[in-house]
Amino acid sequence: MSDPICYTVTATISDSATLREYVDWLRNGHVQQVIEGGAESGVVVLLDPDGTGRTVQRVVTQYIFASRDAFERYEREHAPALRADGLARFGPQTGRDVVFARTVGVVLASNPPEAPHPKAR
Image 1 (cartoon, rainbow, N blue to C red):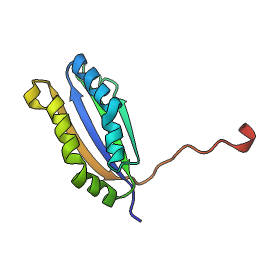
Image 2: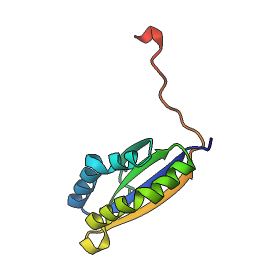
Image 3: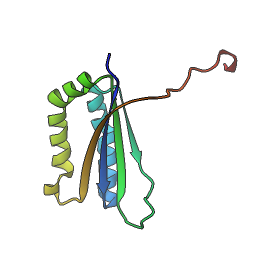
């Protein structure tokens, strides 16, 4: 069995209206569609400001796939349509200032929450 894969999409967004619309899009279907396409989980994180005084916001969405094969299957079978939808909504042709970056890597360690101790019940 291969190691899990973490797929991360970072969106850098310069205006609050687009930020709200992007986060709503993620919460109201896109993350679930990626999970239905093979991810085991997804999380959306609004990063704290970077301290530079810039007005951009960054949203990181991370998906965990059980294996490289599961991620590659997602890339072949589901990602093209999902990415096309995202670009249609937030791509350069919309006039919105959204910059996307993607990274993929192997999960080397994780620490899932433990089950409650029997005495804590």
